[in-house]
Length: 152
Image (tube, rainbow, N blue to C red; front, top):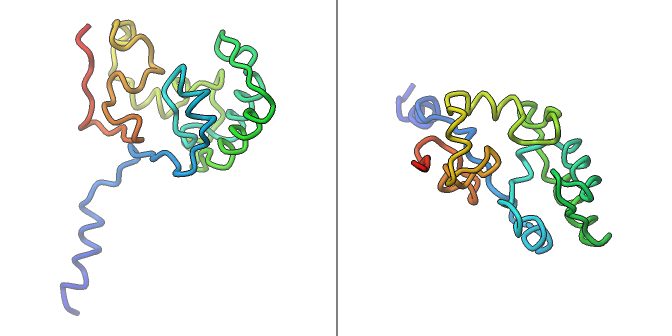
């Protein structure tokens, strides 16, 4: 057997597979950008499963302490898009307590080394502010090579 047939397989074995990339789907509704991303990062729908997105979208009148109600058309459009693009991998789709990405088991495991005071820094403010530390969060890249933790 010729060894050059094995090179592509070998490359796959030695190249790290990154679960830290979660691209935003290409069909992002303008309403998602206008409504949701006007208050916080436009989270990739693959960060939560369908059940969590359904709960979030059905409770916009008390969206983490804020009234984020939408007109029926916008709510339907965003909900359908989130559900269509929700997480399917078990580690992301497991029901999250309080419908929070930051309460998922995978998030907690990935951030277990972050000290409590880091979340309180003015440049971070909360675990939900992904872009504070993950410089390419808006592109769906959360790998450790692109982390810059604000000093204050």
